[in-house]
Image (cartoon, rainbow, N blue to C red; front, side):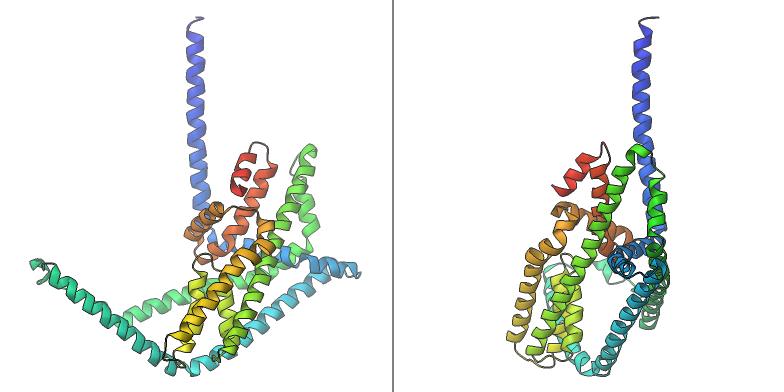
Length: 361
């Protein structure tokens, strides 16, 4: 009996270890499935949280003026909605003017694309001359989808995405108001979920998460504002049409990780097709916007965003890959603040500190 007991205990430990590992894998799979199928709800909640943390200082300032928090929250949300509506209406009028002038730009774009397609066809013909033709390809029947059905499918996809955006936009103001109005009650209820000995640490964690999210939103807002203003002034000096519209779009696109500098070239290059026939002005635009991107990446972001987020480059890249794969474009927008919040939680949870150190190393 004494010789069998140790073997049984060792086997029991191995079985428990395997069951724990399998349970963790199953739990991770369940969480991943939940994140995927509840994407619209979670994205709406996370976006509302970011805006609530961004607007909370204004609500507290209004509270300092002896206004009730509910009234201050309502005023803040109404100001936010009015500001967004004003910006969108201004952009809409400029886009309408640009749409009226689109034929002169579309002709230039068509000429450029036809030239590129002609070069590609020439290269394809040379490759076909080098490679032997497969006899089976001669008798192959190719069925091309009608162009009208392609356009219809694209329109249906676009309507679906626009509908989801409108649904999210309609819920966000209400969520922001409720989060701002009931902030203290929510915090108190959250602290009550933990034992009294851990409430101080939970409170510190929540405050640090709030500082990270607020710093991320404010930092990106000011960086986008600086880039948009600098781009608009530069396009105005280059005598481009619609300099402020192109500057705002280019400045916002410059914030896109990794590919932002390439996307920022598109608006001024398209506008410049009707003005310049030489390559020089386009090279100047590409060069200046690239300098803007480098300055923002190495000076503005570390000063305004990096100190709050405290994530290393590898963690940011992995976060963008994961959340972009899971939630698409909105995942690229929300991936960094979500990962930064996870890093703060890991820093304050016993046993998870190495994960937090790895994310910030």
